[in-house]
Length: 533
Image 1: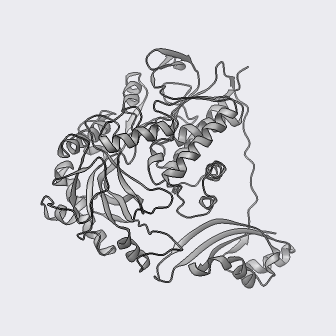
Image 2: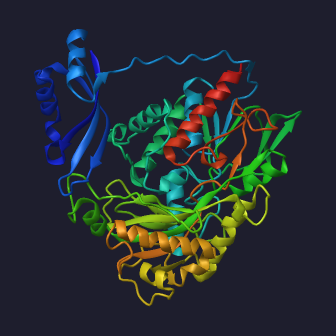
Image 3: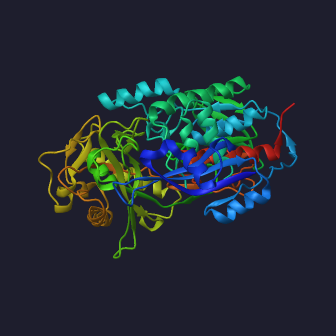
């Protein structure tokens, strides 16, 4: 009998005895528990320093169903595992005349391409930036020298923006495709624990190799991946996609294209608007990056400076501002990480957070951001959010001295309105920082709300606004500032055959949800178009 057991709790130090605990509670020999699979593991630190793992597991017992139902009645959290319902696909309406094209090699693009390749569609993937190894070299060069490649950077290139992050795989969506996404990551080198951890992460170091593995699978199945291949326009006839232009000079016939360009492809948004593709404004959030010693966060969350069995602590913080109605929250929290330069355009400073798998820098960082609504934009133009971002990135660039140095300030000084004369915790951001009043690189109301949020967070985590807390700015790329509107078949309005996908299309927020959306758009494409002859 297949069973699922939720809320199976065990002290962290006894984690290796899970099967023994299960057998004792079930009153069966350990050997009878077969096919044990972790579905989820979360950490309960409410009674710190006594930490507890909370498991959900699936397993089989070779017992009659009648006896199994008696166990279910007796043991809280135990239930019969549901049977999987097979997915039924409809027959495609048309045959492709040309291979499908996927624009972008982030999670949405690569998972769309992988789904197509696995079904024999032999997709062509076009990426404006470099392969992940060359891209890494360009990014390191930018961090060390301030020399920016606007086509290959933290935002653009193989793997997408998530490649230079914490590699977080947490998502709030519920979707059958999540398991496929995680299993694909594991197949290509991610640790198997991501299949069950409540807060899984890969780390940028491992994610780079995972990305290369996915590329190789696409190629092995007949697909093709081209780098430094920037899509510069679309050509259509009668409302149907006909071809795409690459690097302003090569025309590629294509009646089916998955557009997965990421939330920073501002030039793509512009040409889509110029070609009457329906776009709509969308709110997002902006703010600053805060850094603390990791031991400060560990003490607050675990009541010890270091816990070798659970790793560095993270946090989730939210605040609702009574005066303005705006929300503020911690975003992209990176334990044991660093703050990185994430600009993709000349003349703008953008911050982001990154951790490697080990999370061993001893510094915690997170964005503290405040919600922005469409009413905050200067106009009702669909691209107004993009210009809002650019305006404040430009102010941060100027405040940092015009060399991609980030403006920085101690949290205490930010709250008291004075420029910092030193930093007890030096900022990790490269190429470097310049002390300034960060209120000058934020809209006035946003800075005021952020200040009140920081004070609220200090009540939840002692020392959050203390002398060892440093701020850098500005964080603007939390999500896409617009949405490419699509119909029930996944196609862009006004252009049949174009399938906008992922964060850049405004339908995802993070690696996992973007990958899921890429799979969803590939399914839409395959439901409409059969393989070409």
